[in-house]
Amino acid sequence: MLSLRHFFEAPERGKLFHVMVEKLGLGDAIASRPHAKEVMKRAQARCAECGREDSCMTWLAENEEPAEAPYFCKNHDMFERLKHDIEAENDFQAA
Image (tube, rainbow, N blue to C red; front, side):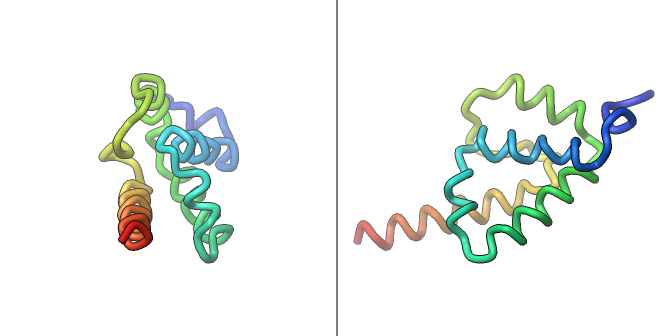
């Protein structure tokens, strides 16, 4: 069975990463992190090599405001760490 992986070059497939970042509302948060450019480059590469583009596109279409990335996302843990760090910083600033 063919997936979208067979039709798009890796950089094109990696664009799903940016869609996921925006869907999770983490665009500004990632951009504000130290070494953001390098982190995003590695994360986009993980996305491009994932092989679950069909599942990802379906998930993105079905989830308007998700609390977290899908379990199969190669960047799930990175997104969760980022959200945790942001919450901790916000709590610290509020105290």
